[in-house]
Amino acid sequence: MELTADNKLRKLIIVGDRLLIKLKKADQKTSSGLYLPPGVQEKEKIQQGYIIKAGPGYPIPLPVEENEPWKDQGEGVKYIPLQAKEGDLAVFLLNGAYEVVYEGEKYFIVPQNAILMLEREEDL
Image (cartoon, rainbow, N blue to C red; front, side, top):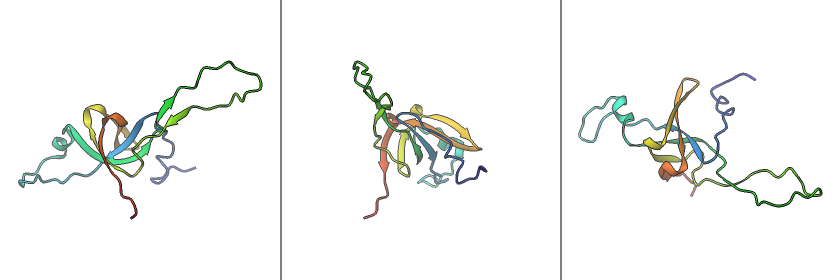
């Protein structure tokens, strides 16, 4: 299978309560008319970006029981789902995020507890 712009992120699996976020392009000019270089904007403590991929959530520990021979051994891990979903605009704390570069694009891996606010476009 050829790697394209459409499918390159399919190979990524986000773990646990983490989110893959791509920064939203900020306005280059401040409200007072001052132009800021991109490096200054990236150093802000609070950033916003779109959630590209989301992890499964918080794992729930399985109850400790005696293993019975008749019991299905294929029980997987269960998760409490995340509030954040793919496509949401997230406002997050930068100091809780990890910057990564994948296929030449810059992303942030952010735990859900670093998310301050979400904006979701829902059909009315």
